[in-house]
Image (cartoon, rainbow, N blue to C red; front, side):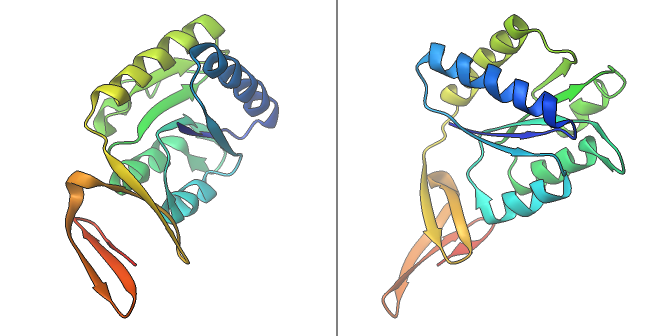
Length: 168
């Protein structure tokens, strides 16, 4: 499982990563966690590496609003589970507009984080998420089997044509 954490407070990011690692060890699930303190880099990352399962996104991050970034994430890949993090519940209702998975209020309580994470993991496991990972010069691509239209070979290359993109 691959998780992305974006929050402008480095201390919070570090403590969340430690808590997530402990939870995943207890669940006996391998996890890779990618962190950002700059929300603008999240979309750049996801455009290159479409391999994230869960995003933990802070909402209030200075100039950039995590809600707007989450809207862009859902446009890129609607299967990514977005869990908002905030010190206020002001955006909780608005999160439904972009199908946010959960909304956690800071400071986080580890037992609440674990309960939410277990629910989200179960949701992911219930989905038909059969996919392949392809790596090329443009990055790493998570390609869902049900989105493949056709596959062709040309000049010793394979081109996978999907609903949203063509991957060489």
